[in-house]
Length: 437
Image 1 (tube, rainbow, N blue to C red):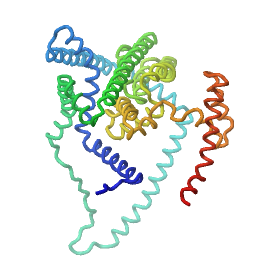
Image 2: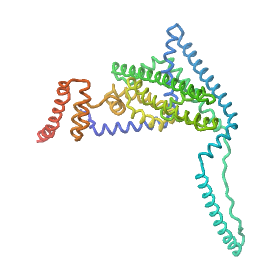
Image 3: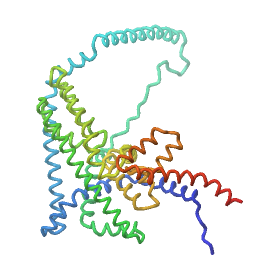
Image 4: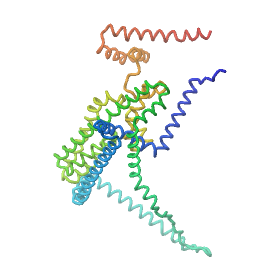
């Protein structure tokens, strides 16, 4: 009995349907997937110190316990120190009120004050017009006697106020604590059984292709570890430079703002502006002039432009394998699905998708869409630009090839294969007509 075959169109529709189901599952089950994904990312960070303690004869359970305790202790100490500095800053805010008021009045200027006076005049005229129309309505109501059994007063507006639910308030307060606890529990179990978890994943996804899945997991692990290490190095250096710069500017609590800049920069695109907002406002409040505030904003802007456009492309380009557009699209997509945790996880998750696309033929479109490797050969690029009538870019393809290869290599590897593609496209319709006849 012959098995039914699935044509290419049906397979594409099936793949699209599966993609929609996967995205819907990720969205509606995010309460489970977000702590699990954050725990996986945290396990990547904590695996090296746990492995180091195991190599010096510590049992795995003891090594995991020590690493988790150190992590929680450092996080608590940093949070306590940060909260103390924020409390001190809050106590000092009333002393900066006059300086901020002067800045606000200077920004408004005489033109803005004139505009506000004109707006107030228009509002007063509107009130007078409304006041003139009210007596006529009142007089009409006086001339018309109310019907028997009715009242002339307007119906009273009723506002329904739901009583506060202590359980909902406790749930909102304990939500982040519960999520943090779930992340720690997931991380402990992942670290404790990481070999077993790896083997189960290979058995589930490998389908007999152990070599391919082993290479894919090793590649993804190395790329994510390098990304996390480089990001920690870059963001720590960014925060250190910010803290030193703000200290020389004279801004209070410069170490706090440097630490905040280092932490917030783990949020792609949104982190640096959020980190610069509070120091800029504080500089406006503390200093009488505009020089220190503009200098604070300039330090953040110049340093972020230098790091984002020079340092990160040089360091990330050889280790991530992602195009800049892929990083932006991934950040938007995962933020829409999972919120701020998705923004943090967007790059590691996209790295995993690109690596899977390199080793699994059915998911190769992830590598084509998000990878940084060229998907067209030089001869195909040259021929495609000639088909589009773009002589300038076709010449750029040849010039780029000549920078690395000789003229003979250009003819043998680009020009002649492009002519072969021309012949192939020309003979394609002829062969199809011959097959039909």
